[in-house]
Image (cartoon, helix red, strand yellow):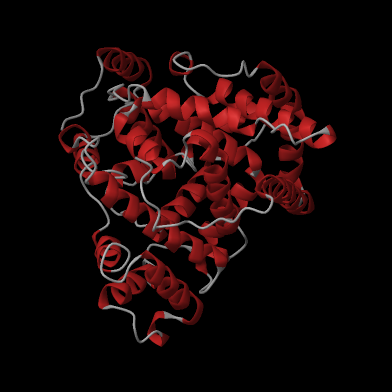
Length: 404
């Protein structure tokens, strides 16, 4: 497989470099690492999944063993195979580059962004469904297709909610770390099944849920919203974006993403990688892109059994999510899909931006306002999540079969 920068992106890159001196594309070494990352996976977790979930042990017993090891520690589980012990050893090792203070500052940024983090991250992700390498695994696994789209989004939101709790990602035995390991194992399980599926073209796409694609999701939780949310009044400083970049780097470590080679050291490096992804798109997802994109926003539509204020609330969030897609999907990509207009939601988002900006300015001079903003944002996000989740359960199920 190869990655080719489009002529239009090359032309824009040349103009920007000539006018400002800033190069929109990464160095050749980083581009080469990004290409190599398209065929790289997570060998440590893959050995564990192959031996347990996909081996003689079976998914049900493997899930029980993983839950037990997370609860009491892998050393207290005599049945744990060596592959599980190796996985836990890597997972529980805190890299030398970790700065706990910087991680907490990054988590605080996520707490301030709250619901907007999830919504802008999801809109940005939908924008990537032009690519078969991303669309095929999601369509085959069924997570973001049809009626299950909202539930998978709620699962992802649960992970976001857990990992940004104060101190959570560095606290042994925390719910944040438990969910992170389950996400890692789930990704590996899906990767193995998709890689063997006849719809997967390894020659064109490399490896499903590759290292490069996982890294893009980390940028979608740091540099992307850090810059994009300025439009909605969130005045995130360059130092805060660097902190959330460091926070996401550690999240990458937890979910099996190699973050020591091409992971950006600066915001500018992050921008270059995002531009490089856009510049090398193949637009080869075919009918799967519309299936995924057009299924998500309508999944917020209240069912016929929902009435009164609950129905109004659901409709409000549907329009809000559509507003985020109008603002944060590239217009020429958004036009490929049949989506709600997004205008009502966009008006709400832009209308409240001055209030958000006022609070953002106030928090810079008042630690009390900063604490209030974080707590208030998280409270609203949790309330929305609990209301939508209802009686359903988040399982992060690595044993789930592909839907076709």
